[in-house]
Picture 1 (cartoon, one colour):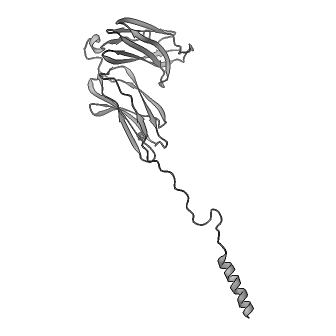
Picture 2: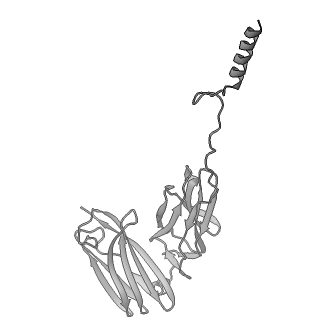
Length: 247
């Protein structure tokens, strides 16, 4: 009997002393917590030239950079707005993709000296960021101000013919010397052709675009944005207009 009790005692000790292991995926377990993103989205807007004025009927190209590892969804994820006299006039729900963002904005026919571009973003964790440009002005084309005063040192004339095929002429007049750069962009904001670049004295100038890019290849029919930038002793002026190439 004593031996029987001893056997049961040894068996009990062996059973109690054995480690108990759960099969993989069975029972309670704790996985590493998911990484939380506490960083705000990155926004960078350009500093606009002091005294920059856009004219009604033009189309200007706003550009900025956006970046986030966990972009949000919906229109508030990456939203650009033009504020005029403190009120939002136009808005653009930009794609929440990291990189360069652009907005071809048609300038309205109104007069205001309190205009700003503001961009806001929110990611999937609720982190927010906002950025605002320096102030710019809008001058309606129907103000009755003479072109020489309205356009300052630069008068950009409408391309002719427009629409066009195979070529169109672009004419401009400078009332003061400065450095001129004329660039054509497609509807997605990609640079197509540098039409003119370099220092110019006051006077009238003309350039011809034959519908090719910087490599000499013919581009597709469509609408293109032409931007003239002038830099001189009094600052910087930009003028934009549209040209349409037909098949």
